[in-house]
Length: 112
Length: 115
Image (cartoon, rainbow over the protein chains, first blue to last red):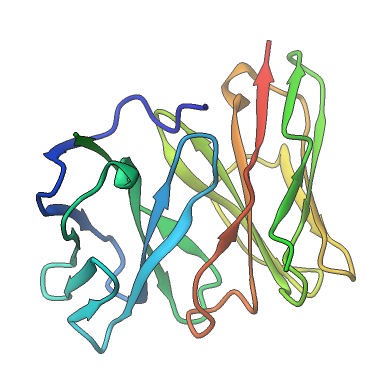
């Protein structure tokens, strides 16, 4: 497959453990945030989103936390599985901006 | 329904040439965005189109251009290619491209290598 990034921060976790991936966003006006997962050779895929009027949202095995005071997002993955190994990006959008900006990405390795 | 389709998937060009990449969005999606992905710079926003109009653009030189057709299909063009243009070019579609409509749906990208 294709490499999506050779110089990314890396998080290595044991299968079954919980993972936490952090992201600092840049624009105070951003009001919509998404986490994407990118596997080798593929485009990014939606995982979970959150709007600025919320501070927590849960999905299946994933939770996103938003702290607008410090402009920080986190993605928590419960019971991490080998299939979760990928690069994870946070993304921010501001209303009417018609532009979604991506963070640098974090590579997650899951050890069996 | 069919996803976002990008063509070609792989291409090799030499410096000074130009290239055109194509993107067919998901049926019913009217917003198309383009991103450049490189190991060093991550995903960089190029431009966004809606109803044949460019609504926003990133910080790229004028060699990078795009357009959208009435059927929402989009093309991007890079002229006078440089070695640094080697990258994965990703197209993403969404219903309207605003924060009200949810996530971007990405294609698998066009891998451009400039020699």
